[in-house]
Image 1 (cartoon, rainbow, N blue to C red):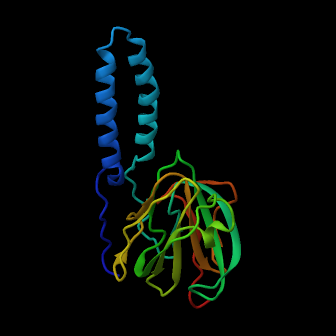
Image 2: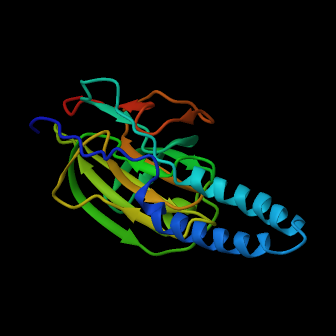
Length: 233
Protein backbone atom coordinates (compact mmCIF):
# COMPACT_ATOMS: atom_id res chain seq x y z
CA UNK A 1 0.00 0.00 0.00
CA UNK A 2 3.01 2.20 0.43
CA UNK A 3 3.68 4.93 2.94
CA UNK A 4 0.59 6.24 4.68
CA UNK A 5 -0.49 9.64 3.41
CA UNK A 6 -2.53 11.85 5.68
CA UNK A 7 -4.76 14.37 3.92
CA UNK A 8 -6.47 15.86 6.95
CA UNK A 9 -6.83 19.61 6.84
CA UNK A 10 -6.31 21.47 10.09
CA UNK A 11 -9.83 22.78 10.46
CA UNK A 12 -12.06 23.20 13.47
CA UNK A 13 -15.30 23.86 11.55
CA UNK A 14 -16.13 21.41 8.78
CA UNK A 15 -16.19 22.92 5.30
CA UNK A 16 -19.72 21.59 4.78
CA UNK A 17 -20.89 24.19 7.30
CA UNK A 18 -19.17 27.24 5.85
CA UNK A 19 -22.06 28.57 3.74
CA UNK A 20 -24.68 27.81 6.39
CA UNK A 21 -22.72 29.50 9.17
CA UNK A 22 -21.67 32.56 7.15
CA UNK A 23 -25.13 33.36 5.82
CA UNK A 24 -26.80 32.63 9.15
CA UNK A 25 -24.40 35.01 10.89
CA UNK A 26 -25.07 37.76 8.34
CA UNK A 27 -28.86 37.43 8.72
CA UNK A 28 -28.70 37.31 12.54
CA UNK A 29 -26.35 40.30 12.68
CA UNK A 30 -28.54 42.33 10.30
CA UNK A 31 -31.74 41.66 12.26
CA UNK A 32 -29.99 42.31 15.57
CA UNK A 33 -28.74 45.68 14.29
CA UNK A 34 -32.27 46.68 13.28
CA UNK A 35 -33.69 45.65 16.66
CA UNK A 36 -30.94 47.54 18.49
CA UNK A 37 -32.17 50.76 16.90
CA UNK A 38 -35.59 50.34 18.48
CA UNK A 39 -36.35 52.28 21.64
CA UNK A 40 -37.38 49.11 23.48
CA UNK A 41 -34.26 46.96 23.78
CA UNK A 42 -36.07 43.92 25.14
CA UNK A 43 -36.74 42.68 21.60
CA UNK A 44 -33.04 42.91 20.77
CA UNK A 45 -32.02 40.89 23.82
CA UNK A 46 -34.77 38.32 23.32
CA UNK A 47 -33.77 37.84 19.68
CA UNK A 48 -30.09 37.64 20.60
CA UNK A 49 -30.68 34.99 23.28
CA UNK A 50 -32.92 32.78 21.11
CA UNK A 51 -31.07 32.98 17.83
CA UNK A 52 -27.64 33.22 19.43
CA UNK A 53 -28.33 29.92 21.18
CA UNK A 54 -29.59 28.37 17.95
CA UNK A 55 -26.48 29.57 16.12
CA UNK A 56 -24.24 28.08 18.81
CA UNK A 57 -25.99 24.71 18.37
CA UNK A 58 -25.38 24.85 14.61
CA UNK A 59 -21.71 25.73 15.15
CA UNK A 60 -21.43 22.77 17.52
CA UNK A 61 -22.99 20.50 14.89
CA UNK A 62 -20.42 21.47 12.24
CA UNK A 63 -17.38 21.20 14.51
CA UNK A 64 -14.62 19.03 13.11
CA UNK A 65 -11.98 18.01 15.66
CA UNK A 66 -8.49 17.15 14.42
CA UNK A 67 -7.89 13.47 15.14
CA UNK A 68 -5.16 10.96 14.48
CA UNK A 69 -5.44 7.26 15.26
CA UNK A 70 -2.93 6.62 18.08
CA UNK A 71 -1.47 3.36 16.68
CA UNK A 72 0.95 3.07 13.77
CA UNK A 73 0.01 -0.54 13.00
CA UNK A 74 -3.57 -0.56 11.64
CA UNK A 75 -3.51 -4.02 10.04
CA UNK A 76 -6.84 -5.76 10.62
CA UNK A 77 -8.17 -2.90 12.74
CA UNK A 78 -11.64 -1.43 12.15
CA UNK A 79 -12.26 1.97 13.74
CA UNK A 80 -15.56 3.71 14.31
CA UNK A 81 -16.44 5.74 11.21
CA UNK A 82 -18.49 8.18 13.28
CA UNK A 83 -19.16 9.63 16.71
CA UNK A 84 -22.31 8.24 18.25
CA UNK A 85 -23.76 5.16 19.91
CA UNK A 86 -23.68 1.50 18.85
CA UNK A 87 -27.28 0.49 18.07
CA UNK A 88 -26.81 -2.76 16.12
CA UNK A 89 -24.38 -5.68 16.38
CA UNK A 90 -25.70 -8.66 14.47
CA UNK A 91 -25.20 -11.05 11.59
CA UNK A 92 -27.31 -10.17 8.56
CA UNK A 93 -27.83 -11.50 5.06
CA UNK A 94 -26.22 -8.97 2.70
CA UNK A 95 -27.69 -9.46 -0.77
CA UNK A 96 -26.41 -6.46 -2.73
CA UNK A 97 -22.61 -6.77 -2.63
CA UNK A 98 -21.49 -9.92 -0.83
CA UNK A 99 -24.50 -12.25 -1.24
CA UNK A 100 -23.72 -13.97 2.04
CA UNK A 101 -23.91 -13.36 5.76
CA UNK A 102 -22.01 -10.42 7.21
CA UNK A 103 -21.43 -8.93 10.63
CA UNK A 104 -23.09 -5.51 10.78
CA UNK A 105 -22.15 -2.87 13.34
CA UNK A 106 -24.27 0.29 13.27
CA UNK A 107 -23.53 3.64 14.89
CA UNK A 108 -26.32 6.19 15.41
CA UNK A 109 -25.41 9.89 15.40
CA UNK A 110 -27.60 12.34 17.29
CA UNK A 111 -27.78 16.01 16.21
CA UNK A 112 -25.28 16.77 18.98
CA UNK A 113 -22.55 14.44 17.66
CA UNK A 114 -19.72 15.37 15.30
CA UNK A 115 -21.07 14.50 11.85
CA UNK A 116 -17.85 14.05 9.94
CA UNK A 117 -17.32 10.41 8.89
CA UNK A 118 -13.96 8.60 8.71
CA UNK A 119 -12.78 5.58 6.75
CA UNK A 120 -13.06 2.55 9.07
CA UNK A 121 -10.09 0.69 7.51
CA UNK A 122 -7.00 1.24 5.40
CA UNK A 123 -7.32 0.02 1.82
CA UNK A 124 -8.51 0.97 -1.65
CA UNK A 125 -11.97 2.21 -2.57
CA UNK A 126 -13.50 -0.50 -4.75
CA UNK A 127 -16.81 1.24 -5.47
CA UNK A 128 -18.96 4.19 -4.43
CA UNK A 129 -22.71 4.12 -4.93
CA UNK A 130 -25.46 6.56 -3.93
CA UNK A 131 -29.04 5.34 -3.73
CA UNK A 132 -32.14 7.46 -3.19
CA UNK A 133 -34.75 6.24 -0.75
CA UNK A 134 -36.97 7.02 2.20
CA UNK A 135 -36.21 8.91 5.38
CA UNK A 136 -37.24 6.54 8.16
CA UNK A 137 -35.83 7.15 11.63
CA UNK A 138 -32.19 6.12 11.39
CA UNK A 139 -32.23 3.66 14.31
CA UNK A 140 -34.98 1.50 12.74
CA UNK A 141 -33.78 -1.79 11.16
CA UNK A 142 -35.44 -0.99 7.81
CA UNK A 143 -33.45 2.26 7.53
CA UNK A 144 -30.36 0.34 6.40
CA UNK A 145 -32.15 -1.00 3.32
CA UNK A 146 -34.87 1.55 2.56
CA UNK A 147 -33.42 4.96 3.42
CA UNK A 148 -31.36 7.16 1.16
CA UNK A 149 -27.78 5.99 1.49
CA UNK A 150 -24.25 6.06 0.14
CA UNK A 151 -22.24 2.83 0.00
CA UNK A 152 -18.44 2.78 0.01
CA UNK A 153 -16.87 -0.63 -0.61
CA UNK A 154 -13.24 -0.87 0.54
CA UNK A 155 -10.70 -3.62 -0.10
CA UNK A 156 -8.07 -3.87 2.65
CA UNK A 157 -4.39 -4.63 1.84
CA UNK A 158 -4.95 -8.34 2.61
CA UNK A 159 -7.92 -8.54 0.22
CA UNK A 160 -10.81 -8.32 2.69
CA UNK A 161 -13.85 -6.34 1.51
CA UNK A 162 -15.50 -3.99 4.01
CA UNK A 163 -18.67 -2.04 3.29
CA UNK A 164 -19.29 1.33 4.96
CA UNK A 165 -22.83 2.68 4.51
CA UNK A 166 -23.86 6.27 5.25
CA UNK A 167 -27.60 6.41 5.93
CA UNK A 168 -29.88 9.45 5.92
CA UNK A 169 -32.39 9.63 8.77
CA UNK A 170 -35.70 11.36 9.39
CA UNK A 171 -33.92 14.71 9.82
CA UNK A 172 -30.80 14.23 7.70
CA UNK A 173 -31.51 14.99 4.05
CA UNK A 174 -28.02 15.34 2.67
CA UNK A 175 -25.23 12.80 2.49
CA UNK A 176 -21.80 13.96 1.31
CA UNK A 177 -19.25 11.32 0.26
CA UNK A 178 -15.64 12.20 -0.50
CA UNK A 179 -14.53 8.65 -1.35
CA UNK A 180 -13.57 8.10 -4.99
CA UNK A 181 -13.47 4.75 -6.75
CA UNK A 182 -9.91 3.48 -7.25
CA UNK A 183 -8.30 5.77 -4.68
CA UNK A 184 -6.28 4.57 -1.71
CA UNK A 185 -7.94 5.36 1.61
CA UNK A 186 -6.69 5.38 5.17
CA UNK A 187 -7.87 5.58 8.74
CA UNK A 188 -7.61 9.30 9.71
CA UNK A 189 -9.11 10.45 6.38
CA UNK A 190 -12.62 11.80 6.05
CA UNK A 191 -14.99 9.53 4.16
CA UNK A 192 -17.78 12.09 4.13
CA UNK A 193 -20.32 14.07 6.14
CA UNK A 194 -24.01 13.63 7.00
CA UNK A 195 -26.13 16.62 8.01
CA UNK A 196 -28.23 16.25 11.18
CA UNK A 197 -28.93 12.98 13.00
CA UNK A 198 -28.26 9.80 11.06
CA UNK A 199 -26.39 6.49 11.06
CA UNK A 200 -23.37 4.65 9.63
CA UNK A 201 -23.29 0.86 9.12
CA UNK A 202 -20.12 -1.21 8.72
CA UNK A 203 -20.36 -4.70 7.18
CA UNK A 204 -17.52 -7.06 8.13
CA UNK A 205 -16.76 -10.73 7.46
CA UNK A 206 -18.47 -13.12 9.86
CA UNK A 207 -15.91 -14.18 12.44
CA UNK A 208 -14.45 -10.71 12.92
CA UNK A 209 -13.78 -9.94 16.58
CA UNK A 210 -16.25 -7.37 17.95
CA UNK A 211 -14.69 -4.97 20.44
CA UNK A 212 -17.72 -2.80 21.30
CA UNK A 213 -21.01 -3.40 23.08
CA UNK A 214 -24.60 -2.37 22.41
CA UNK A 215 -25.22 1.17 23.63
CA UNK A 216 -21.52 1.98 23.83
CA UNK A 217 -20.51 5.48 22.77
CA UNK A 218 -17.95 5.72 19.98
CA UNK A 219 -15.49 8.36 18.85
CA UNK A 220 -14.87 8.49 15.12
CA UNK A 221 -11.32 7.52 14.08
CA UNK A 222 -10.48 6.64 17.71
CA UNK A 223 -12.67 3.79 18.98
CA UNK A 224 -11.67 0.33 17.69
CA UNK A 225 -14.95 -1.43 16.98
CA UNK A 226 -13.59 -4.73 15.59
CA UNK A 227 -10.62 -6.71 14.35
CA UNK A 228 -10.89 -8.47 11.01
CA UNK A 229 -10.36 -12.20 10.82
CA UNK A 230 -7.44 -13.16 8.61
CA UNK A 231 -8.12 -14.25 5.04
CA UNK A 232 -6.66 -17.70 5.69
CA UNK A 233 -8.97 -18.44 8.62
